[in-house]
Image 1 (spheres, rainbow, N blue to C red):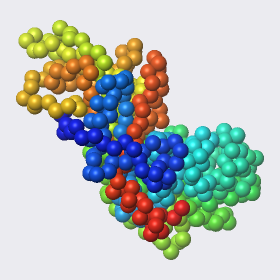
Image 2 (tube, helix red, strand yellow):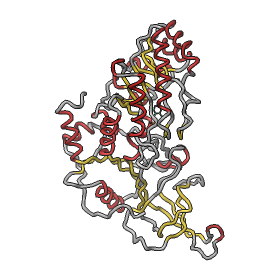
Image 3 (cartoon, rainbow, N blue to C red):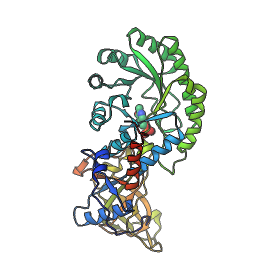
Image 4 (tube, rainbow, N blue to C red):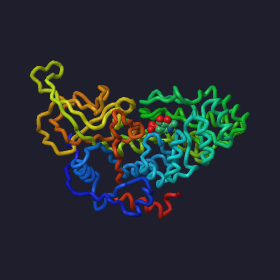
Length: 444
Ligand SMILES: Cc1ncc(COP(=O)(O)O)c(C=O)c1O
């Protein structure tokens, strides 16, 4: 609790024209923090504004964080071009920022391809990374010049031969996902003992296979799984080369956490990945390496700000402690059917730690508390057994690390609207972006 300093300065909410042109052409409303103003200033002012209006929940999306993470990626994995997984968070300002930084994009459907294209992403920067696609989505990709796509089964090869015969195919293989919080290999990927047959079938159908992909699972806790996965990919490359395919692309998927408090950081993954790439796919092999990071870019960039809309004091006591305090019961205006869906959907994000926006005297008495979401469903619980100072209706709480698989999964169950997203960027970062462009560091 009481993590944010209280600051009453007014942040500028009027982006200058240059920033609007690159970061937010039409539909992104990024706010520029100039004159040293901070995100905390922005949140303070937004809360003041909302206090006199609707008290709706909102996100602040810190685009500086996305920018910094990108530089950290380039520093640690210089050979691996990131194709951001749009499914993780499809906020237009995030996509604009990454497009400006020249990343590629992993899209999972026609809808995501459509969105990326509408935000200025060019088709050659998109991989349609889904191994089981509806035929008409493949036709859409074909019609819009998106050629790169994954497969892991024979029926998909047949479908692709009918819907996009000139596609450039990436064979997704099963790898060890047992060290990840969300496992994917039970649903996607070809077993190693089936790949030869699949490649032969692709040959018969006249299709072009150009690479191999894998995903170690989301929220990977052991960097070593990448070593075996890259070695397995080498084996498939060799098989495919023997069959006459020109293999030019390796896609090492996602799985990297975006939280600073996660047990494995990108630096540790990089050590293993870079070593394995140098051994199995050295630079002189000419193979292009890409990845599909989602969480890594956005998880810590989004803070959710919620309001206490109701309060009850219950007379029951924790664990029969007769002399302890009453239980404080709070209801906030966002919950597990909204922004906090991770609590029921995401094994990599099963708890949150809300903290009070306003300053609190740390010596204040703490009460046994529970916080519920706003819907009429008892599954909609945010946190219980939480010992915090007494809160009041109207207080604002902040929840960090809310950027991954949140906004893209939110519902409006019970008629509660989705939290508004306010992307913010400092003037310094904006100038750095501009410089990157004028110096030709970023090629568009
Ligand atoms: C095919 C594919 N690529 C990339 C991702 C992104 O994974 P992460 O957010 O763990 O980086 C996912 C997540 O489910 C995925 O299914």
